[in-house]
Length: 111
Length: 115
Image (cartoon, rainbow over all chains, first blue to last red; front, side, top):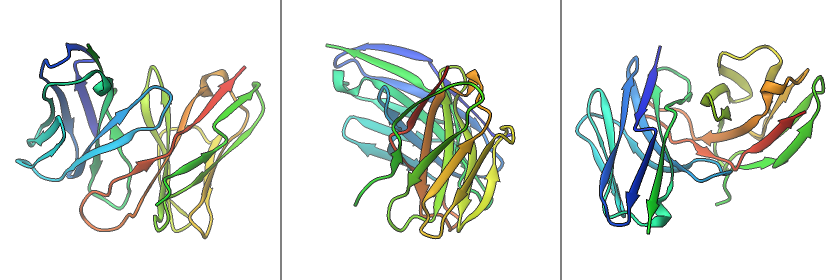
């Protein structure tokens, strides 16, 4: 069974204090690993797709990396507006678009 | 390009009633997936529709059903509502097809409260 585990569950940072979120996964053939950001009461907002080990993608203060067993979301010099829940999901080989999600990391950035 | 839209945004129902939620995907997207999000279980896959056919189904009881129309719009129905069905129901659409993973774009969700 495909599984995704995210850690930590919650993270508090001071503005400017860089850190990383972890996403460990087991999947029967990876088609893609996805990172989303979700604000309270809203739908997840797409951030990155990673397809193979060694791949990296960046967007503003965020950088996502992928190995064969885990992915990291690095946040450099975060700002209060980066506060949100960050979700990791995997899509397995096969004909379906089904995503298996982790429980998320709730990030709070204090000014 | 317009994003995924879901209606209604909020619903309050009582136990035993049934409810229908609607989702309009991004133009050109042929796959629509539904997810249930609760504080305890997180985001869980309900089902996926592609070209009006259910392609995959999650581990939910038969009270949860859905369908997709020829214009790719989708509806999901929950019959005989239970208190535990209170959740945020999210719809996501994607282009589908191809070997590489397809990005799913989510709508704002429908917040269902069962009293």
